[in-house]
Length: 237
Image 1 (tube, rainbow, N blue to C red):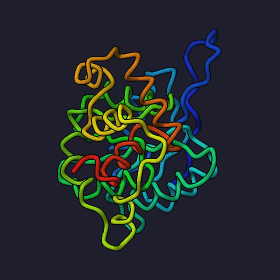
Image 2: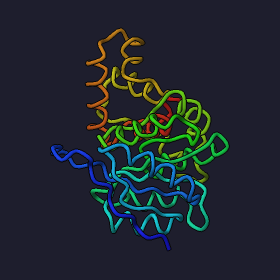
Image 3: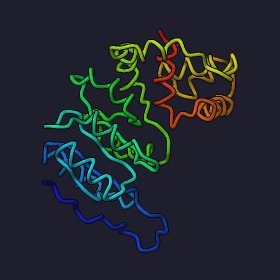
């Protein structure tokens, strides 16, 4: 069973900001080691534990209370999708970044529905991986057009078998204005606030305000959940 590592302390003795606590989950030790070494040079990030299975990830997430879990998808036993669902289930749950490759596309919608806040592609630039961790730790979601737009458009429109997704697609968006519906549709297509502003001929600040109101009205935790909702309610075919 994987044992938690000791937290990495910030190198600066004058910093008053606690580092972002990260749990690394991957069944390949070399992948975890590479990420751990990478984060060791970043005083604002601290690896507090590692796990090689989904079961260990759920246990360590509960024991260590990390801010962010970097979660692999394909692991023996419990996979990263089920582990993500369990890790994000409770109040005050950590944010989850799912590790994927373009060969893992079929897992993306499952990860979205399970509460993931974004995706990392394993061959992306190391600096981008660190930036992604910081983004979700700050409460945002990683909707990187180069990564998720293709994945979301191809797979989020494939609801799981059964009546629930069909019912969700017929559910009205109560209290959402026509302009907010337009914004939600564009969020569902993977557009950033800046791109939404250009498309709707509004300022970036106004686009951001519309997104914030949608998060509040729809009780969505982050932008990823808005994407899922846009597909489930049929705004994005």
